Image (cartoon, rainbow, N blue to C red):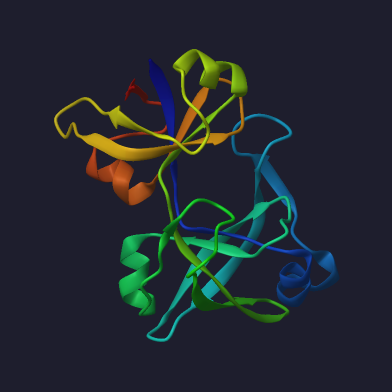
Length: 186
């Protein structure tokens, strides 16, 4: 079984309250869909992210707005910011580190920083064909000169077929590019 991979750089998801604090009444504005039309999208807005040790700019805000504010960090970001966040699935913020986000209209502080768990979005029909359930894990094998096996890849709802998300550091370590087809080992 194969999955297409998309690499995910650090980014932020905002609540209405956070969006208002950072961007005022203007809010966030649509730039383009990340995958399929009607799904998650990239905005034109960026925030600066501040931790106890330093700050990093140019974290793109993704839409639509969510019921939680979440910043998905890369491991290298953590050293610069001085934080040690947990690895979590999106929306699971228990143990998330406190960060301050800065936008053109103000700041917003929340326990929102995580490292994103590598995962595959899979529709219910494909999940049944796999003989698996949401929340279970699979291994995904890459190819090429830097081939490796990604273990503990979570199966999560969403999309049609299989779409794997890796953070850019994990993908770069394996020599992956957006759109590569990787082998799912059941």
